[in-house]
Image 1 (cartoon, rainbow over the protein chains, first blue to last red):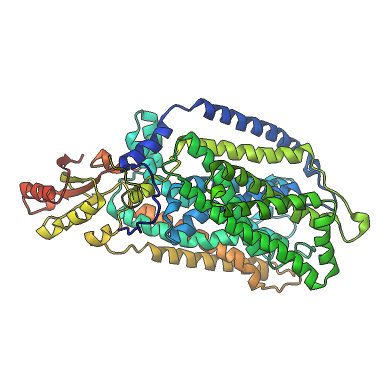
Image 2: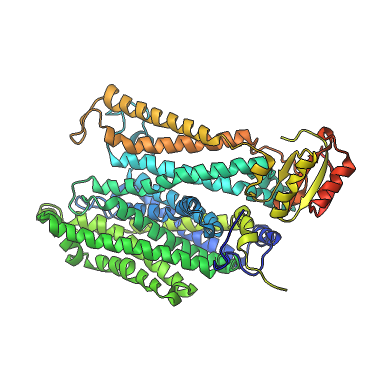
Amino acid sequence: MHATAAVREALVTNGKSVHDVTVDICSRVEEKPSKLWLISIAFSLGLLTVGAYAIYLLLWHGIGMWGLNKTVGWAWDITNFVWWVGIGHAGTLISAILLLFRQKWRMSINRAAEAMTIFAVICAAMFPIFHMGRPWLGFYWALPLPNTFGSLWVNFSSPLLWDVFAISTYFSVSLVFWYLGLIPDFATIRDRAANKVSKAVYGALSFGWDGAAKTWSRYESVALILAGLATPLVLSVHTIVSMDFATAVIPGWHTTIFPPYFVAGAIFSGFAMVLTLLIVTRKVYKLEDYITINHIELMNIIIIITGSIVGIAYITEFFIAWYSGVPAEQYAFINRATGPYWWAYACMMTCNVISPQLFWFKKIRTNIASTFVLSIVVNIGMWFERFVIIVTSLHRDYLPSSWAMFYPTFVDVGVYLFSLGFFLFAFLLFAKFFPVINLAEVKSIIKSSSEKVSD
Amino acid sequence: MASGKNFVLGIYDDEDVLLDAIKIRGAGVKIQEVYSPFPVHGIDDVLGYKRSRLPIAAFLFGLTGTCLALVMQIGMMTTDWPMIVGGKDFLPLPAFIPVTFELTVLLSAFGMVGTFLVASNLKPWGKPNLLDIRITDDKHVVAVDLDVNHVSETDIKKVLKESGAQEVNNKIRE
C-alpha cells in the first residue's frame, strides 16, 4: 500500500481514473496515423536514404572515405559512438536506479526513455562496426569464435573487447527489461483491439498475459532483481567505454578520472535527450496530465547535478594536468583549450558547464520552451565533449612532423545522419504502435498520487 | 493455473476494497485467483502466496555466468594460446573482471526472465483465459471456483457482495 505525503505534488493531474489512463494511451495506438506523424516518418526516411548512400560509399571503398588520417585515427565515428552510448544511459537509469530508490515519478517517463535507450545503443553499435572496415568479418574480431585466421582468440585484456561485451549485454538486458514492462500493456491493447490483425499481433506480443495475482507477484520480483542487475550494468557500460581511452597512454586520455566523469556525462546527455523527445511527445499526444511540469523539473534537477559533476571533472582534469608536472599532459590540455580546436572546447564548456546552470532558476527549469532549448544545447555540448577528448588529444602527435587536422567528409556526415534518421524512425514507430506510457505502473499510482478534482 | 469451469466472479473497482474483500477466505470461501490490471501491493500476503523463488534462480544463473566467463577467458588466454599483451601476465585476472561481470549479469537476467516466463506460462502463442475483459483495463476480479468450494453458491455471492464487489457474475470457462 502507498503512503504519500500530502505536500508531495500529484504525479497525474486532472483527476484521471484508471480507465482514463487506458483510453488516453491506447487510443494513440488505435487511431489512424496523423499527418504530422507521416511527415516525420518521411523525413526520417529521407535521412536514412542520404545515410544509406554514405554507408554504401563507406563499405564499397573502405573507411578511407572518412576524413581520418594517419594521426587522427578516431574522430567522428568514435565521437558518435560515445555520444549515442551516453544518450542510451537515461532509460535504464530511470527504470532501474529510480525503481530501486522508489521514485514514483519515473513511472510515466520510463517506457519512452527505455525505448530511446535501446535505439540509441543500436545507433552507437553502428559506428565501431563500420569502423572495422569489413564488418562481415567482424564476428571473428569481436567475438571469441573458433577461427583459422592469425591469432586464435580475441584479446580479453583489451578494453575494446570489454566494450563488445558491455554494450551487447547492456542492449540485451535493457531490451528484456523494456519488453517485460510492455507485456501487461500489450495485453490491454489486445483486449481493446477491434480488428483481427491487431488482436493477433498484440495477442502474440502480450504472451497470453491474464493479470493473475501470482503472475504479478513474480513479475514484481523479476522487475526488482532486474533493476538490481541493471544498476551496476548501466554504470559499468560507460565506465568501460571510458577505459577505451583511459587505459591508453595518449596524453589527454590517460586519466583515472574518466570512468566517473563519463558516467556522469552519460546520464547528463541521456536526460537531455529524454527531455527533447518527451517534450515533443507530450505535446503531440496531449500527455500533459501524465508528464507534468513536476516531471520536467525533476529531470532538470538531475541535469543540474550531473552537469555540475561534468563541469567539476573538466576543471579537475585541467588541474591534475598541471599538478602532475608531466609536460606532454600539460601540453595536451593547453592545446585543447587554446589550440586550433579552441572553438570546440569553448562550445563544450559553454553548452555543458554554463548553460545547465541556468536551471537553478525555477522559472527556467519549469518552463517547457527553455527546457527544450537547453536540452538540445546539452546534446550539442556533449557531442563536442567527445569530439574534444578524441580529436584534440590525437591531432598533435608526439612529433610535430605528424601534426594534422581532422576535416569531416560527406561520408562522415552521412553516416551520422543515418544514425539520426534511424533513431528518429525507430522512435516514431515506437510512439505509434507501442504504449508510450507504462499503463500498469501509472495505474498503480492513480489512487495515491493522482490529483483529486472536485466536481 | 485455474483448472475449474464454473466460477463466481466478484468485480472490484478499488484496490483497497479488494484487499479487504480477500478476507472472505476467513468465511471458508476458497479463492481460485485474483486478477488485476496492475500489481496490487500486499496482495500476495493476503492471499497467502509464498515469496517467489526467482531471486534464487537469478543467483544460480549469475553464478553460471561467472564460472563460464572465467573458464572461457582463462581457457583462451592462459591455456590454449598464451600471449603477453601490454606486458600483462598470462593470467591477467584484473583484466578479466569486466567481461566476467557482464556475462554474470547477462546470464542472470536472461535466466531469471526465462524462468519467469516458463513458470508463469507466458509465451507468444499463449492464449489468455480471461475471466473478464476488463481485467486489463480497470477492474480487479476475484475468481471463486464453485467446483472446489463447499460453501453454497448463494452464500459465496452474498459474501462477495458484502465485501464491496460492484458486480457478482457467473462465468463458465471454456
